[in-house]
Image 1 (cartoon, rainbow, N blue to C red):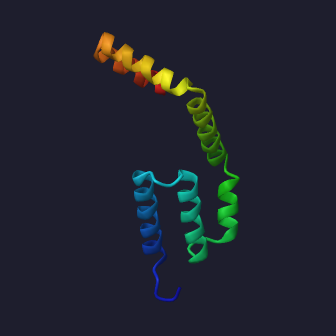
Image 2: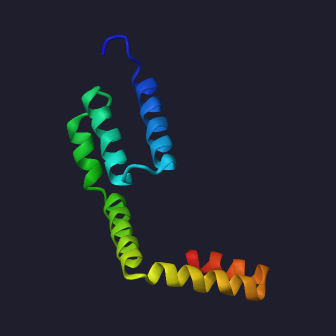
Amino acid sequence: MHGLNPQAITLVVLAAVVLAMIWDKLRSDVVALTGAAILLLTGVVRPIQVQSAFASPAIIALASLFVIAYAMELSGLLDASIRGLASLCRRIGKAGLWIVIALAE
């Protein structure tokens, strides 16, 4: 890694991860872990930094949200909720949008 700038590597990996997530052909967990692996293999981050990142309460909370959202999608609850909220917005107009925003917080 003599001539490689760690900031440039990080920027390229970040851009690739964002593009892969927008492309949406690969699972997001695979994309994120691949990005982390590339940063680890290029020496931009140390193994202890990667390990401590996975122990972060924020990462655990985010992973939990993915699990909950997936369970809601499999059960059909997510689609039903979206249909209900879209119907509410059609019925009451702009106020419905503000209600959806308030519920999302």
